[in-house]
Length: 263
Image (cartoon, rainbow, N blue to C red; front, side, top):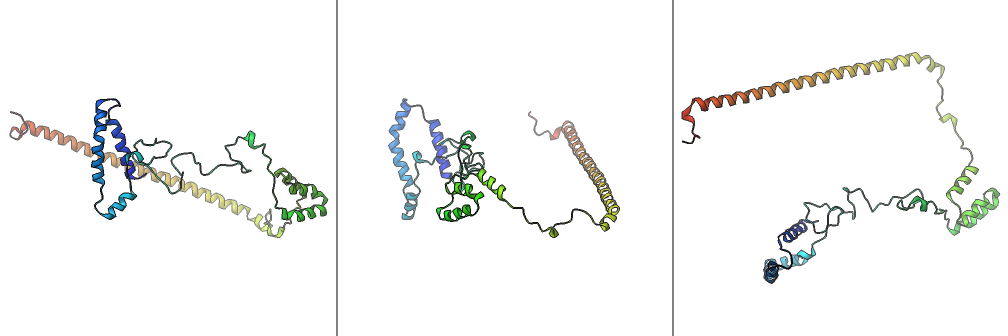
């Protein structure tokens, strides 16, 4: 994805276009000239200083070792105008497919597994063994919870069992009603009903007036702007037309200025 890689790809592509098909005399001549070309290329690549020699070793270049552009829309070795690389491997915002983030269902099963297979997987809860004494005591103290605790310790408690246990033993929430707003209006608020309705009607009327004013204002500006633009365009066209007429008359009526005529 570097400029040097692009240059190598373009050079290899044009070399492929310009080279004759295998089995011809030109190909044999080209093969005979390859050692001379290789030696000339090596001479051109010879470093002029030790520092440049270190850089040449680090940046080794060759036609047959160009970096392949791994992309869904570009074949490796095919010349491209540009390629974008990101710091995150595999990230390509121009493509719809994203392989790093795997979509999953509510149980964590990858979405590419069909539902006919993923729904047959039995998802159960896992609890570390150090919690087994507490769960056993909880089941012994509450006989209604013992079947669920036994399933949990045996690794057989599913999400459906958990929902059944939760809604069977859930207690109603204690609600502090003084903290909740009253769902009705007081007598003083009821007396202001007409005033509130009048305020709502007044605000609605103001909004309608403002909408009409803005509509007429911007429509007037639009029509005025279009009219001025058409008038200026008409002036330009008329000036250009008169210029053409004047130039035609000048060249017809002034023969001494016909410098471009061929005698």
